[in-house]
Length: 177
Image 1 (cartoon, rainbow, N blue to C red):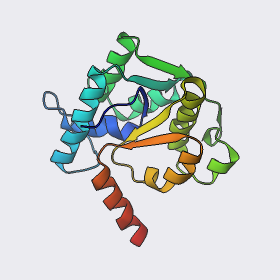
Image 2: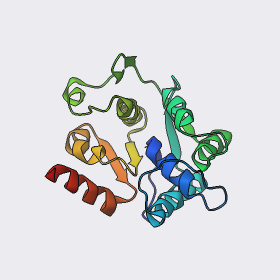
Image 3: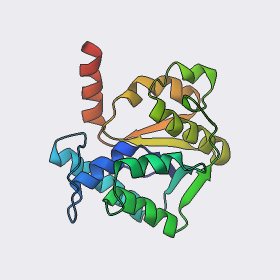
């Protein structure tokens, strides 16, 4: 497994896939990818993240955590990782401005990041970069991040595709349609 960064904005799909693959208490939830082996890769990454010194980046306004809770229950592995990060003081809250389109982004990213739910993740990563010199989004089952990779990099936003071979293949297939 690759080395973890100092801090991450964790896209909700990571928590969902890892919760579905949890070897102790798997959740019966709709998760992408469907492949149990790939879900286990995501679970392994999230488990490593939980045990590491890496910090979780959340918005101080609570909208990222609200999304997590909308998709997952309290006992799901993904939420338990968030709780663990809080209980070990390993969460960095950043200020994210919101408007009717989600997290407020620079003009150059507004047309690029079309998924309004992901705008808060991008805005949090931007705020993390300003506050800590590092803004990274970890994702698993959502291939849109690959579409935005170049524009995000121009704003110093790093992406960590946990199941990169799979997500790049799915992204390429989507581009052919």
